[in-house]
Image (cartoon, rainbow, N blue to C red; front, top):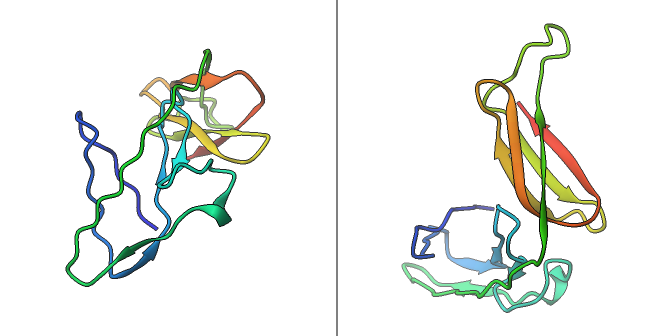
Length: 130
């Protein structure tokens, strides 16, 4: 399993060994709905088309992401339970409660503050990784 971030033009490259892969596209900001390479929703893993990569082969797998609609923000501060001091550089990940899909994330600042914007209305669980 590998992940990369696109460049400003939306281009990406993922070096992988020869094999068959499902390619997932997500917008970490939450402003677009994620899809599998073939356009199936992220909740339909079994239906996602496998992308075959041969030895020394480059395969193109593109996707168009639809806007997610009206959005909101979850913001807060991550602190140490013992010292109550801020924790910097912790990952805060928003997971949609209805299906467990990661819909956004942020890294805490030196003050422990974070903000995850672009979230659709609904219930979310937060995962903090320090």
